[in-house]
Length: 111
Image (spheres, one colour):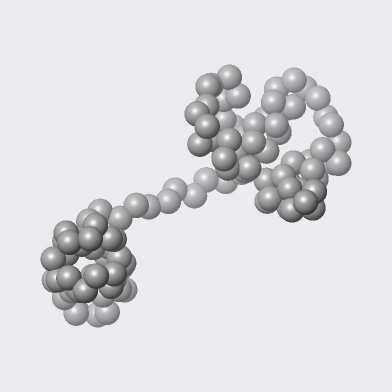
């Protein structure tokens, strides 16, 4: 069952629509404003990469914008890679703390 996304020309909203079997969904109604002035748009997709692959491809010297630091998983990745580059084994407590930070649990526990 393919899922298509449609953008409404009237309100600018984007909605996903599931197409069942041979059903053709030409111009679905916008669920936000009810307009039938919709057009199909390109959907985004995700690329799943293993933790080991992310670690190997990650360059700690590359400058990052602020959006990078909004994702706690990236900060943890940076800390792990940097420790590895320096040849430092900070032990299991370090790894545990990094994982807690990456999942957001560390901040929740501090509050």
